Length: 397
Image 1: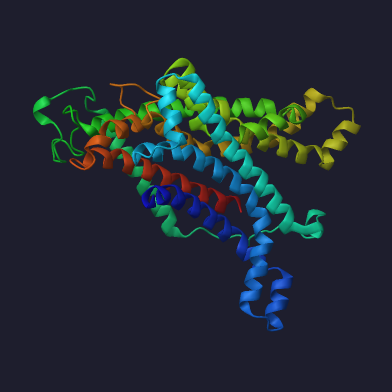
Image 2 (image 1 turned 90 degrees about the vertical axis):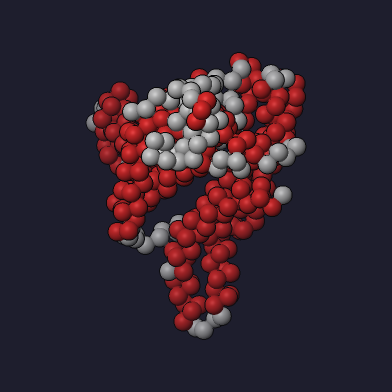
């Protein structure tokens, strides 16, 4: 259980570490922390209180982490051949065994809901009455300028992906050569070949175009649905909270159990849960905009709802929503690749990044280059997304 635990825990731990990195410096810059340091209180005492100060703001972010763990357990159990709930749900979805699929999915969803209830209870216990009543201000980290090296890393990742995709598009991804099975990387085949002798660089390049195209369509549709639902916050608040506890992988299992595995089923699964963050963002921005003074002045001057929507509300919401959609596009690519790896997305022989990992997993020990190529491409895409978001946040500050 060590390797599966590390596979699930390291990404979640990195995200929590990033949240602490954002919140703790702001807590240490508050007046109480500077006063405590000036009067000579022990550093450990100050650190414990700073951590207690930051945890209530971090705890709501733990729910998406738990949801991601539940969804990621499906792929991890398949990779490490663990007989768990995730693998049971996957096998039931592939076999279209609906009763077993419903039971396993319900159990996984209840885990996420229970975690959400515990997180909210812990947050209220840590906050106490003064913080719940808004006695303390929000934490704001001092603006930081992203290091120049981060720009070089972003540029290097982008150039690497573009070079791989361009070189792969110039090759035939479906050409089978049984005399060239599982060849190691060479000048003729820079990323080697798979078990059927097909060029992995070609399949990686063509798979990137197909995966990115579906991800772009899914992100666009999710953003539009989230925008429309977020504009009616009273009606969408409950569904948004419920859908946010459902991982896209579990939605993919449910849809595959009904319609069978397909790329459009995977896309519908991501759309079914992907609209919730956009709806929540739209509702929050609209609430903030409606409370501003210029909206009240426009209403006093006789402006109607269509005018307010066209001139004030949409211009305040749409740019922020587009930035959020661009930042979430790589995440959508990774989710679609996960569904493809589980056999719930694109079907053979069409190349797709997740499908490449699934097809070549049995040969990982004999020919590790067959899985290193698509895995490295996904890793580079993830690094590009993270560094790009950091640079964008730095410019915004």
